[in-house]
Length: 312
Image 1 (cartoon, rainbow, N blue to C red):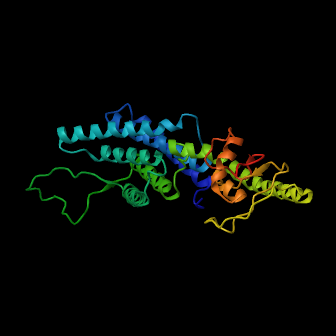
Image 2: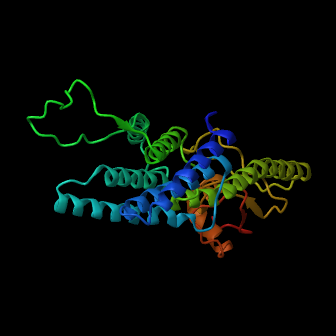
């Protein structure tokens, strides 16, 4: 994890977002209640993302947050399109709220959905937006007549306003840029990531079992081979016919019972007959002696009963 993601920085940004959330909630009774409701929803989602990244916050229904914020983003987009058609312009507050809801939805998406070029572009945009809000918003100059000698010349820019609204929007932009830089912890929000987390312990357990089972199987094979060679109970093996099988393949482990043969991995009745009797034509006798074996290929160490007197 990047060193910028610490408990202190996360706590400071959560406190700043909580203050911005309270400001927008206090404005929901005014004329622009809906745009402040959109700002409040974005701030609430950012508080959760910040807590999840810095403190590991999680709750059972967090998988639905992606769909909740996607619905809010679509609703804000519909309102913005309606304003554009009716008023001729979306307006800066609604445009900013729409972008904030969109990027919160983007950060709630699974990691496979978030692309580095898009994340980098959003990061640069919100760094710029934070600087713009910190600089302040320009007040519209009063309309004056053309014959007014006291008209302010264009050399002097209009004054800028830096109020609580501008500071709260700058805080939100800083928090979004911060989360885009360090990466939000949404590993257990996306459905595919949740499945991967569920299977991870099983994969580790299977890997550990495989590591311990291989030496045990080798030791058992060595013990069976040494026991068979000590008692001299190995079945007579006819001279082997040259085949295309690799010469480096390990010899099959001999079973303690002289009438049983331990198969190699991938053996068939025909390959065993060719190895033991010098011809693959004797495979039918092996199949009759092992009617319960239906597999076309056998696993390593699987015991095959040998016919007592194979037909010539």
